[in-house]
Amino acid sequence: MERFDIAVIGTGPAGLEAAITAKVRNKSVLLLGNKGSSDKVSKAHTIQNYLGLPNIPGDEMAKAFLNHAADMGVEITEDKVNAVYSMGNYFAIQCHDGDYEASSVIVAAGMSAMKPFPGEIENLGRGVSYCATCDAALYKGKTAIIVAYSAEDEEEAEFLAERADKVYYLPQYDYVGSLGGNIEVTTGVKPEAIEYKDDQAILTTDGDTYSADGIFILRQQIAPSQLVPGLKMDGNHVEVDRSMATNIKGLFACGDITGLPYQYIKAAGEGNVAALSAVSYLADLKKSDN
Ligand SMILES: Cc1cc2nc3c(=O)[nH]c(=O)nc-3n(C[C@H](O)[C@H](O)[C@H](O)COP(=O)(O)OP(=O)(O)OC[C@H]3O[C@@H](n4cnc5c(N)ncnc54)[C@H](O)[C@@H]3O)c2cc1C
Image (cartoon, rainbow, N blue to C red; front, side):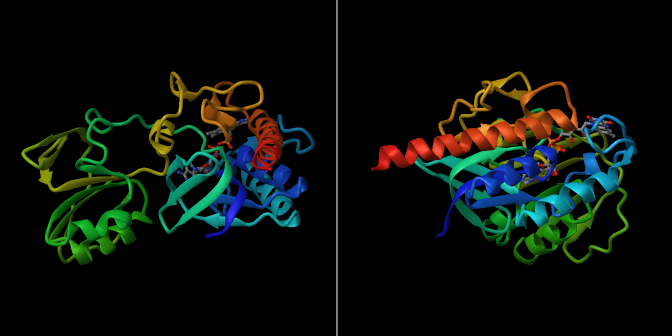
């Protein structure tokens, strides 16, 4: 498997700037995320405080960022990262559509407003999972619940339903889809808590209680401590030093995920620092290998 010098997670201002800087420094870069940049950029109304781009609508700023990255030869691999594991002198990156390796990682995944449900973290890997397509093979003849946040999740539900006996699909968005067969769609229910009893995952909602072999929560963002096991947090944010280094050697973080203020220019600036720090780390790694 190809081992990239630097893997960057997230295509908001922090991730795009980190990838551009890494590319300028002649590193091989794997940029993972959404090809359209971040919704927090493209859906913003008008931005007044980004240097050089005064009074710019969010969608135009997203285009400017993406054009800059493309001009520099930075490609976006559209995939969602499920987990990053430190393997000593490299990282294994587990994504929705495949697995990758990189010598260093920059996490620029932004902040999610959503908190985990009570019981979610405690039951991760034991009834609770974040990737239906990754685990589908384990659900032959079983039942599953999907809590979905985007129409794109309907494809995951269909894939899982090809293996599972029954899938309960609980969309948390305006559902206009046409899922059917062994997929039972219930709209308008709000999940409240999860527990795991007698080999069954139980989801309590503001309406019914659902019971199945497993629950898939398909949020766009995964809590950083779940994304990178062992990552040290400072409250809801990833703890970093001034070089954007985390407690895990070779792993850096930048942007909203490292703390307030939530601002584009701060995110991009930290992306630049994180990439330069990753470049120094790689130089040290190379020296210690010789
Ligand atoms: C409505 C609105 C208006 C705003 N206006 C302003 C303003 O005028 N000025 C200002 O300075 N700031 C403003 N902000 C704040 C600004 O949007 C954020 O500070 C900035 O977007 C943070 O950049 P980021 O790259 O850290 O994270 P984000 O922009 O959140 O990007 C993170 C990206 O990572 C992706 N991602 C997350 N998890 C994964 C994963 N597991 N695998 C792959 N990809 C993943 C996300 O989908 C997202 O695309 C505004 C925010 C909002 C919501």
